Length: 503
Image: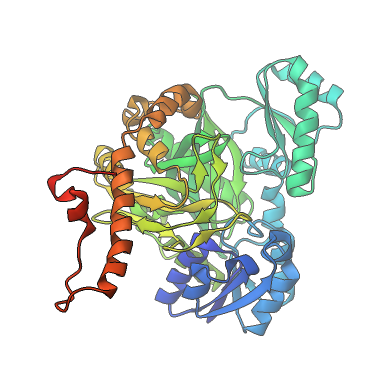
């Protein structure tokens, strides 16, 4: 039985995995770079190990250093989280060679599904619908043009080893093929060390629907229903919800059965995700499989009532699944917003810096998966995500209302965030009515930009600044306060007791 787990990751996902470990009585080991010495996952873990400089390739992506840390601390298993080495089959293979349990699928499964061309072949063999396109890597611009002309425009050029929107190019006509081909290959090589690309017919007005699956070592597999992930900026998800307002009960059953068939086709073990594109006529096509935990997994946990990390650990412990498909039900509605340190007025550029003040929302049906605290510095070296804000309610309408409320309560000073931008999304009529697809952001970008430009928060922000100044000045005042030690309030001096702010 697993007694100690090293989490080969950082930030909120590392803390989230450690929480489940602690509930299961399993000790946790954090690894950290020089930039993360004071990170929350380091402080939360039972043990911690420095593995290198800030650069990912010298720390969180260094297989040798992570294996060495696991051995030094006597870890039975390694949980990869998501990102970094989570879908690296060589890492999973090394763990096995070193006698360390990798909490995830077999490396052979990762090889089969990590390469998107290979994954398409497996899905075709399993009878799962796939988007029309190539089954072999493209060899030249001329071949790409010939295939594009044959299947018809628009088409999507994709990196075989890609993810997160990298190495993807939408092609509308033959004049765009050469540039798309060259830039996609270059971007793929830079990001993944592989320049293999392929073509798929572009599904117009698509929905991005993914199904959470679980498999064990005994051939059992189930799905935990769908997540609607269509609100994306540059192919990066920013808002997710479950159940999908677009999916009907009949479609849900068909897609769920296809997801389970896909998992069984590759003998999948642990938690994974089958991603589909669904057109406006509700025809669905296999997109890819993520052989790891997803960023948006909390909304599934809230609606289905299953701790996915605990299930991953149980499967790694060679336990069979504790439930069957008929035991799983959807209850209520959940929405997740990704809170990021980015400047929405400056093309969403990352906004690293010191988090001066933090006021997190709470209340019924509110969950925050985060790893920040007041005084913490968002580093420049990694993804700028601050955390994930999740709400649950009995209906979708109530969930939207709750998300509006908690986004209003969420206050961060010291750096720029996308909180206001997310708050505006919750008021767009198409989102409120559930009538949206992956074109939501492009369709409404002018409206969102116009709303973001309004200064409705200016008075509130000034008041927060004034309150902080008052706090600092009271600290000085108390040093020389009168004998009764009562603080002298600067609010009175500013006239704020009358509701007037004088700057």
